[in-house]
Image 1 (cartoon, rainbow, N blue to C red):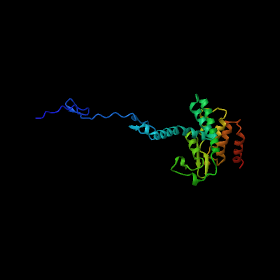
Image 2: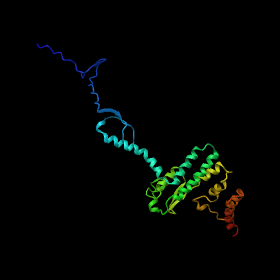
Image 3: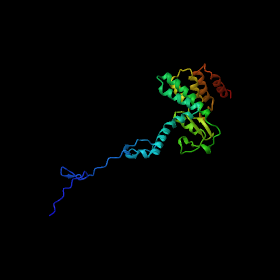
Image 4: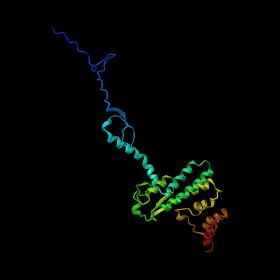
Length: 248
């Protein structure tokens, strides 16, 4: 009879614990070239969140591409800001001042600067637009991406500017006077309160139906302004408009 040979147990042999066979083969340790790394989350570079093995020494192109995409994602907002015109830059500065104002007085002044920046943005938006180029109901604000001034328009709207595109006039316009409204609300007796009232109650923007149609309407609009602000520099204009109705 042959005796059984003594075969040494290998590291990969099965072991038992509490009577249950594990039978798991030991994994070979990763080589120095292949290391286990957890990929960083970066939408621009296309990394994943699951652990992965990357042959680091053989993926220089991958890492260079990833580094480039990561750097580009940081630079793009800065490049966009650098490409902004002076009006958008002033609008951004005014928006920051509104957000950081420490009291109602300083916030009112900041809203005044914001309104002035909105008016400047409107002047800087390109003329010569057309409905064929600019109207797109599927895009934000119904403005097509190819419309001249669309990028500036979207940035201005993001910052809170009340500008829009008027289909009937085929051009850019100011839809409201939010800056003036906030100024008047926060500082009704301010040095520019008469201007704020004029732009919000007497001649608001984008409101053809607001024009007075009778002497009573004119009195309610222009007469009320004269009584509120008897020393305003706009008094002469209010009296002129009021006279066109009362002299008929």
